[in-house]
Amino acid sequence: KSGLNITAIRDDFPILKREIHGRPLVYLDNAATSQTPTQVIDVIVDYYSRYNANIHRGVHTLSQEATEAYEGARIKLQEHFNARKPYEIIFTSGTTHSINLVANGFVPFLEQGDELLVSAMEHHSNIVPWQMLCEKTGASLKVIPMNADGELVMETFHSLLNENTKLVFCNHVSNALGTVNPIEEIIHAAHAVGAAVLIDGAQAAPHMVADVQALDVDFYTISGHKVCGPTGIGMLYGKEEWLNKMPPYQGGGEMISEVTFEKTTYAGLPHKFEAGTPNICGGIAFGAAIDYLNGIGFDAIAAYEKELLEYATERLLSIEGLKIYGTSKNKTSVISFNVKGIHPYDIGTLLDKMGVAVRTGHHCAQPIMDFYQIPGTVRASFSFYNSREEVDILVECIQRAVQMLS
Ligand code: PMP
Image 1 (cartoon, helix red, strand yellow):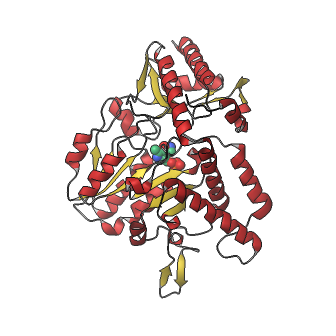
Image 2 (tube, rainbow, N blue to C red; image 1 turned 90 degrees about the vertical axis):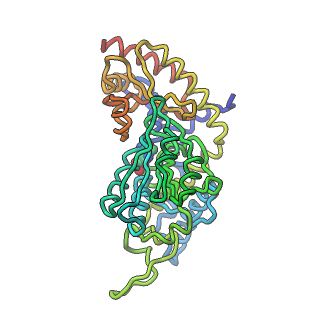
Image 3 (cartoon, helix red, strand yellow; image 1 turned 135 degrees about the vertical axis):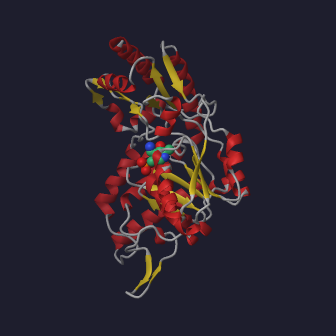
């Protein structure tokens, strides 16, 4: 048993007291975005109430306080992910921005004949930037296939690797299926042929802690809004040697050392990749969100979510005609499903009328839907603040929706 006090935890999240269409909100769309606890909301209010200022260049007190808090958040992330140096943590607007930054950074390192490996279960944000990179450089994209359980076919992965492979990218956890991918094996094998690895940790970060040094991963990305932080802030971890080699993504203020019309030199890390005024408050709140989660404890979160996943899986499978996509033994608390003969959108719409928030559609992972030959799924994604009672409500409401629709 996890030992989490769910009633007390739920009190931290004001939004969970909302009613939707006259029913208590049951929020099961945590994989899209997580809710925000008072502890983080207070940090945002405190920032704008007491020390809102631009950072890194002010001599005045407010600017110094804001700089200290922002750089303090960077150190929280460094410690959380066990990066060697604080400047290996680059603040971005989110995972999408982080991946585009790396895709742009690799333009000078690739040429015709080079190969990039992508997994079959990626979010579009870990596919499209690489296709754009291939268009610019002449490199080609190869796909690591998946099986019907929603797991990567690792034998094929190993056979795809060769001396032309320059980069491998894969999510740590699939947003559409919940599968936890064998990233240790992927990183190790990719390094053996000299390829760099980017792991999209957007869906892993709410459930587990990645140790970037132990993994020896080259790049790891997350979004603040999936870990109880605000939207518009995220992180790129990059190994120092890569970050030094890659060109900057955007030009502007903050990222330069010296500017003349003849030649501009760039600032060192992390500023080289942080052009312009950043999301200062977002960064500080991101740090507070990581503190909040660590305060609860990732071991307790994982244990509780495992119980909830098992309970929800069992209860959902008792519904006639319900099929779950993503049946790996190694998965997080995400359940993607369809009910025979019913469009996922129709179930989602009726669930909303009953106060239950789920996501429906392709979840920005169209290749997965093509693999299963379905238009989309209904996805219920659980967080540590969801309760067993909410699972019961979900099941009851699906049963009612199915009755109404069939
Ligand atoms: N990768 C994965 C696995 C995701 O789940 C998401 C968000 N749904 C993203 C990338 C993109 O994250 P963001 O929209 O925060 O940039």
